[in-house]
Image (tube, rainbow, N blue to C red; front, top):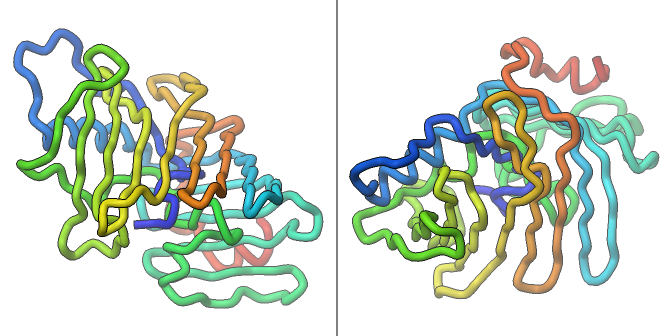
Length: 251
């Protein structure tokens, strides 16, 4: 699991596809979680992403272009600020590369880089791939379903799978009646709050209801705001798009 586990979402694709209204029997925790996971299902994705990160009172702004395919392929190119323009990251499975025009060639990074923030705070590369948000967590039998501010909503307590490479002790996930993510609160192994993530400004693109603004606030007061611009889904990408040559050449 990633450091922010949502921002630029991470790009979390929250849709209304598969949502059932007026169901006769209440769903259990695992069924609700599967409904939420099912809304993260666009195979390919493209967008520009504005990222505003505040660290120790100083704010940094970035503009990126992002392409993802499934859960394990992502290409990120930084457009602004000018000093970073043209640099970027490529993920193919567990392999990770970074490219900077000043170096002129892509550099392989250790796989741990997939879980680390790209800019010291804010999203990791893994956060940018749709569908990765909740893949390392289960709603076990002891998961909590509780009241939320929205009628018909759900509150789930999720715990990481034993083999999952995550540092969190649990997540509290608030879901709307349509199985759309509303908020995620991350806890450490001792039960302390690590960060809170809220989703807003939904935009409907076809059958997809997409949160175009994601706000992440860490326990130390640092924050990151992600704004998704012109998202596109199911754009026909295949594995051949995600190459080191494309990362280096900008094509």
